[in-house]
Image (cartoon, rainbow, N blue to C red; front, side, top):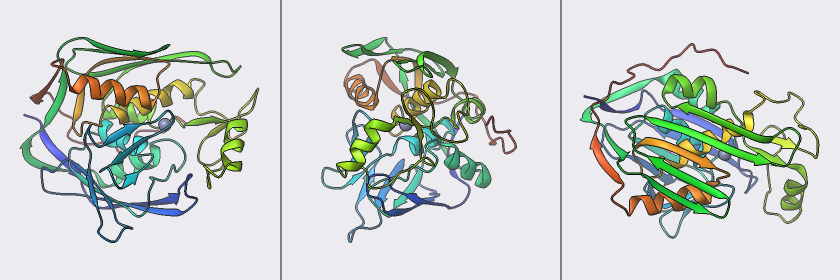
Length: 299
Ligand SMILES: [Zn+2]
């Protein structure tokens, strides 16, 4: 039997919102209830609650957001990636703004905090979504394939016409160990020209070299450079793990994504959830009871 879990203690993280330019506080609060992941807009008068569910999730090209139709929380994907990979089932996420701070652009700051507080278990069996039949979804050159599996395994492939990126692919079985070592540190990336244009148009009010990898035509502008040569495709895997949690429960399947983005991931999942290729199961899998606290960073 695999039991549901929450985090061992409250976590507080603060950072600048790249869209709003505001300083935003996020509190992760453990819960003893089997309530799934509940986001709360703490900054609004009635503190609206937005439960994580496929109906409440929207994927845009560059980000994933959740909404109850009236209120929004943008950029949830890196936090969801950490929660999914670290096998958290139930959590209250209090957000004092309309977006999750990007922090260093990776999921590592969230992972680090969860490592510090550990887990608390609820004596209720864990429920997961499991792919039971092959399902594929494509849009132009972008494609995602879901195959049945008892584990979560991801293969991502990207192509960017840039000397530092080109064609990259990465395949990995997701568990807390592999995730912390191989994926959690990979930062989101953007191209200088596009970011400058968005800043000039006022779409981005915050954000700097500490929130993402920024590239010009030939190189990385961040003074510390890359954390891995294939950091770009590793981040694609990180994003995908977050989006695969949009049903609010752990996801089991072999997922292959080619030239994909958040819009494709979430649209594919909305379609997958409406088919009979996915099943809700009570997990009897072997479980990781403790989080590795002393795993060395790779960067
Ligand atoms: Zn991302």
